[in-house]
Image (cartoon, rainbow, N blue to C red; front, side):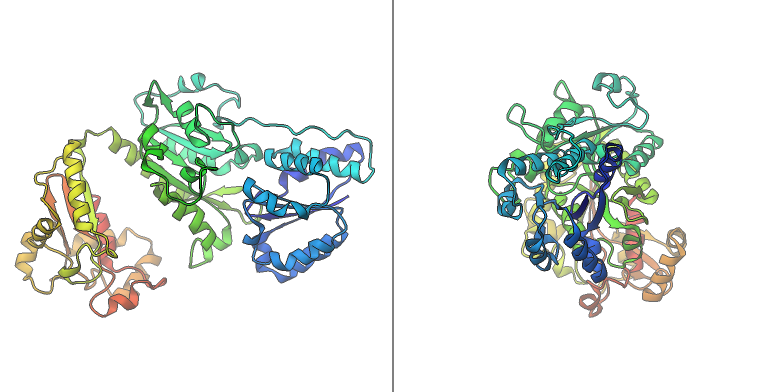
Length: 534
């Protein structure tokens, strides 16, 4: 038999191939043509090859995360599918989408429901069921069509542990003196063995001196105590007697989990604060560890970095949940398969982030040092805190008030935004046009001399050094620099530094360069953010 498998933001045919391999001894020989929508969009030749294989196929399976129209050439594919004489089965991971595409499949409702369950529950055993259903339809060897297999919905996954280890057994392995990171991965990755990047992530965190509690879960798990989705498993694995077992939560799953948890309760991304289970249940820092389903060469060589789809589901939607953005820890390897390969620099970066956030959480509020960075688009003090009509100054006052009440060391809380601005103008901003070097050095939050910045500059890769010099001259450049010294703006208020995002350029250059995707930020970005860490 011949099966065509098309993946649209969904898993490929790896499990289907494993199932076919095991059925070969039973006299069932399966030829599989598998195509991912991204490859089809890039290659007209591959699309034509797909059309040819559909004409020869005994069955066409289309797996979608949501709607098939996310494949830009789907409209060109529809007439081909309509002319196909073999069964075409389109499965969407979004239950609300399935009725819209039910008529693509010409079988009975019973068969449609059975095939939906096979693809929904996934795994090799359910892929066998799909093949055996087709085998029976084609009059092949007399092998019964099995019932769908419902896999484990959740569990602990650690490369060094028994797959069936209990939570109590696992917790006894942990060192209570170390900070602990909770890691969340999908049940799909666990079932398919897509864990190489997760294994490396776990090792990276543990090498930094952290405990890890890595779990997998399925969004199909039934509700418990009025909760559904991820909140169930945060309570089950990461909480004990109402207190968190973890100091930081690391998510390798995509999109908005707050929105997913309220499915069936309306649409949109407006989730009430009271429904933010990250805050109301665990109340620990939540970091997004990006898992990029792009090929290695696309991710490594493309100047744009993440594509539009990845930006949406890996960055924008998680940010709506309030996640702290990490960097990619895995992407598709050069072989083009769906399994991710680890990205060592990203794993090291996110592991350090996790350790730092966990350490900060264990500090008393009065010992924490905080920087509040306001936006100043150009070297003009009249636009400090400018942000598209938002009242940033009043927001900062509110933050200072809340932090003071929470025990942070705040020496003074301004009554309102106007008072805050007057206090800020007594210090140094990114506008050095009307201030003498002597006054700037006295009032600045910090000064980075040429020797100090020289060490910082030489610490970055030569490639980055060359780009900085080509765009902005020899270090330290000219942006917010006086007499060869880099001026760090801002005003200290107890343990709180209120400062400004470095400006993108000087004067008329600002608008032209602000959104340029190629020219790097000036020297001050590097100097400022490295100085901020000290």
